[in-house]
Image 1 (tube, helix red, strand yellow):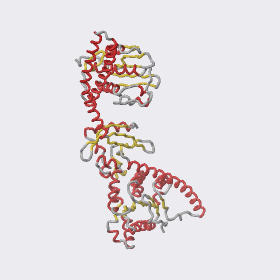
Image 2: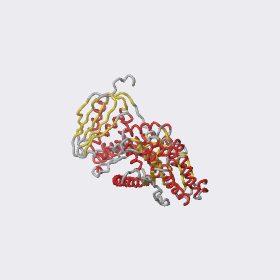
Image 3: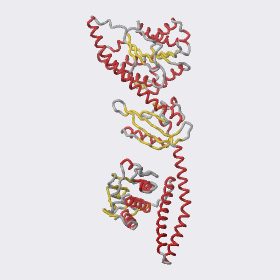
Image 4: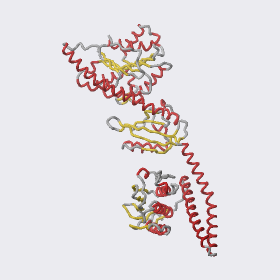
Length: 573
């Protein structure tokens, strides 16, 4: 007789296994499990061998359940045929498995509180010597149980695990289940002493197994908690294999991209990537294979209706228990509203800068005219005030120019006039010009090598002025700034070193961003809009160079940029 189980109280996620020595014992348990489910109105799915399906249905009909068996409450399918629908190269394909089983659950579960499933799929894989696929399939059942309400009854013939060679496989199978029901007999043990020894050994193994199952349940509870967080997230969270196949899709992803989870899971991730951006996925996969996380990557994705959505992506590699990278988790945040606000802000800055340019130019002209008249009248005090006024107007004019440059950069309209020139000569000239504006610092050209580059001389001069004036501004207690111009490999490198307040490491990655201002209270004392380094960075990027900073709080900073050396200028002329 089968071990007594309360078949009416199966929890929605319970996954249990029955080991058996005879078909009679199995059918006793199975007919009670399915029969009880049919009586209480549960949907029932049987994925078994033909003899077991036929014997089960005879018993159910004998119990007066013939109407339920032939109705839409009950689905029966051959285990071997069902396996063939999702096995690929000897392993279960997750997407196909999910599609096959989910359709059956949907068929019998509609309008019902619960679904009961009996499966011999894994037992068939074990019988065919494919233990790895069997364990994988058990894991897929558990994964499906996280998103669908059903209880699963698996059955294995005990003779399939004879010998110590199957002990590890047997243990792994037990670990995949929330309850294990033993076979009906241990009468093969010859004497009471043998039986006592066997029971003692089984108690020890059972204790170990219970501890492992308890740990697994704790892990499952943590997974459920994390799954709830993922499902309730405002951001779209999608996971995929390294081959790009989507394996999870939360509610926010449904809202953002318009595809339901059922439509998206099993599809390639390019489902939501515009064709012209498919190369991004290859680059992302390359970084993930190296274990590199990708943070706040701004790009465009495509909705189901064909429209595009601006997103910021954060992507992390998914690793298995052995530390191997098996896939990727993507978090996508809709930044459409933020970009629209930035666009309007850029339009306002551009408009305001243009509107300010004309009156400031007029004021500057009148100021210079008045200054000359007061000088002619020998009114030195008034001329001095106008000189200071003219100095402030120069600062305002430069600020307006910077804002206009930012607007043009954002629109991709900043003009460049590129030609071959001597970068070392430009550095010397710029140092002389900036030196004339300061009485507090000596600008020392520490190293000077002859270097020739191809670029916009005026724009690169703008970069140098910014770096030099910043060095003076942020080193009020120092009296010198060091400058180097050197050839390093195929690069012409310019370095500007100050001995001022320095920049904490936490801020160094962001100081080249547009309008970024360091939140450190000590830095608040220095005025500025946070656009000078952004402009410098964009100009260097436009020249296919790189700008960087090395700094420590309280010891000063060294800003440097590198440009490709120009050896043969004939092609540029």
